[in-house]
Structures are given as structure tokens and as C-alpha cells.
Length: 90
Image 1 (spheres, rainbow, N blue to C red):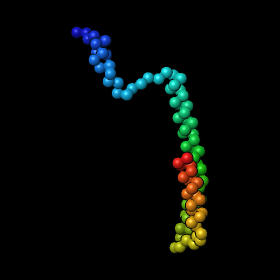
Image 2 (image 1 turned 120 degrees about the vertical axis):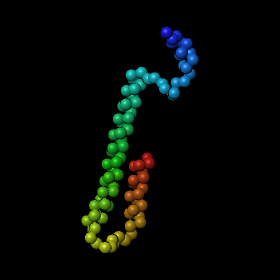
Image 3 (image 1 turned 90 degrees about the vertical axis):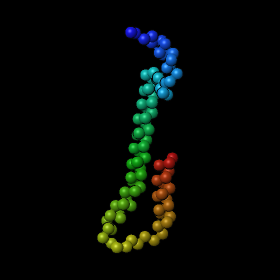
Image 4 (image 1 turned 90 degrees about the horizontal axis):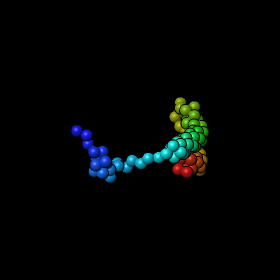
């Protein structure tokens, strides 16, 4: 028994599950945009690394010291926090 495909499409055609189609140029535009976004995020992460790693490196170097003497650290920390937030939140 063969089913009438047109009747099936009419019966179930409205249930598309949110699918849409795109042509090749639309697909390539999305891929290009994604690649650009990935590269942008990589660059931002490298900048964040350059902000954080000196701090962590210095902490590591002084790991055997029981106390850290760091006067006036409030403004320094706030400036670094602002840099990181600018990179991560735009």
C-alpha cells in the first residue's frame, strides 16, 4: 500500500519543529561570522591572560612567604578589574 505523500504533507506540514532552510551564501555568511567571533574571543582571552598572569606569577613566586605586603592595592586591583570587565562584557 502506497500512501499519498501530498495528503501526509497536508496533515503534518504545519509541524515544522522550528526548522528553516538557508541557501549556500547564507550558510557561508554565518560560518564566516562565527570564525570572526571565535578569533575576537581568542584575542580578548589573550588580553585577559596578560592582565591576570603577572598577578598569579608574583603570588606563586612568593608562595613561601606567610604574608603579602601590598599597600594601596585597592586602586590597582580596581583598575585591573575594570580592564577585565571591559574585555569580557564589552
